[in-house]
Length: 221
Image (cartoon, rainbow, N blue to C red):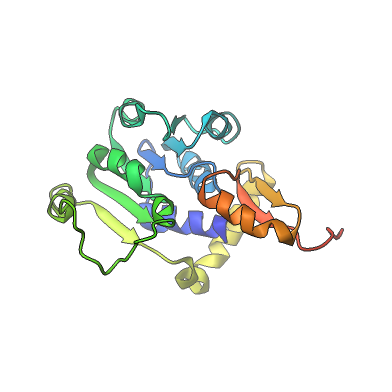
């Protein structure tokens, strides 16, 4: 499912073209890591965003991204801008928050933004998507930028795409993984009793790759 999410969001909504700049939030995660690798296969310059030096090193050294910027760095916004001298053509949105704020001014005309998740806000205790903000109203500026730059922002739920999109994904991804062109990483939690703590760690960005919980002994095929 994470691979299918990456494949569909990037190729169907992001529509990357060779030579374009693609920025991927949560780049070391299960979805983001695959997004960036597919974008590289399509001939794009790929910039990852991850939390911490270890994750950034994994994204560039193992996954082959062109660069990765640590969102915990106080100079994150400036370093992201430096990494994207020609602006951003596709931004795969996984997190929202400060990462979104830094990306938004760098989007080029006719940029595409597949919206997969908003990790930075999952722990917001007062989150309510029907509520009116009591702070500065950012909607006019946001919509104005979308209008002037003709930006496509599209959310998607992967369950909507299985009927028509899974067969081509399975064919392409099976070949890429078999050929070593796409690498995957699982962060295995050893026991079901550890699942609550693992979920808390996931939301805090402590995981590396796809978190899976072992509920019984591994069985050989």
